[in-house]
Length: 435
Image (cartoon, rainbow, N blue to C red; front, side):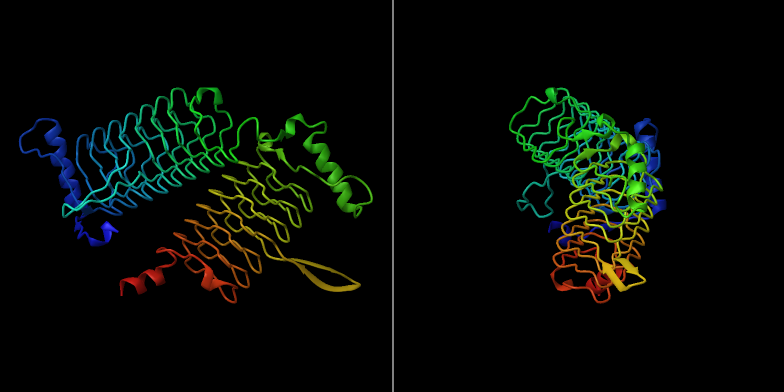
């Protein structure tokens, strides 16, 4: 990679503050002012809050984990910069040059990127040809941003949160929007020819405004494909839950088991602290719901969609969650350990949790328990797994690329040699690489 060959210059916070003040004087036409021009600097973890950097240049800079809240980068040049993991809340990039930039997993809520240039781009330090790379917004929080008129051809918005964004008249030709949450997005006049929107969330989007036909929408969730809304069921959810409680207490002799398979439950909004042991909900849509501290053990939840849910402290022991989706969910302290089954007349039996092929990209799983779980081919890309317990789990072909795995328990795991760990596997591994 080109980044590995560049010797980036280092700057301190006080030096950066001085440059910002000089740029302010320059923009005001005052004596001694100077335009801020930084090329190939490493500004990681520094802070520029609510500053005016209109027309400044940061070409090729590493700006990871920066606090840039409310800063004005109108018409600035941030060509081929790395802004990943940064706080870009309420930041303005109006008409800015962001070609070839990487803005992965950053928080851009309320940001303004109207008419920004986000086409492919790359830099060379020695005059050699460098193939252009698309702007990377993978997993970024772009809730409510203004992207109207933006040039984002071939940009990568995989798993990005674009809820309520304004992307009217934008050029997204060839863009990658797989798994992106575009709920309620205004798409009037947008160009999407050649775009990929596989498994994107498009509920509340006026699909008739999308004129292009050459779009891959495999598995995309629209108002038409979301399934039957729970509100349109002949029986209310409260009545179903009451019948399910009777079914449980009578060991299946009375009442009825709760079955919400293929249904859209988003209108319920909250199932927090509910007891839903042994329910059937394959292919159910729980997107964006508050489900913290739920008890949903020994349930059938294959291919259920839990994206953007609050699942803090949820108990899913012994459940089947094959190919379920948990991207961007808060799952701190969640429990997926085997469920212990026993009675006076029999020895203890263990019902393990099956999460084969499940997706946890960008999820917060600090302190989660995966003891003995079948996690074959699961995807934990960029998930926070600090303190999680994987002891005895089957992690064959699991993807941990970019995940935080500090203090994670991995004793007696199966298939560790087949996993994809990436550069951010742990601080210990990074230290070994640097040594």
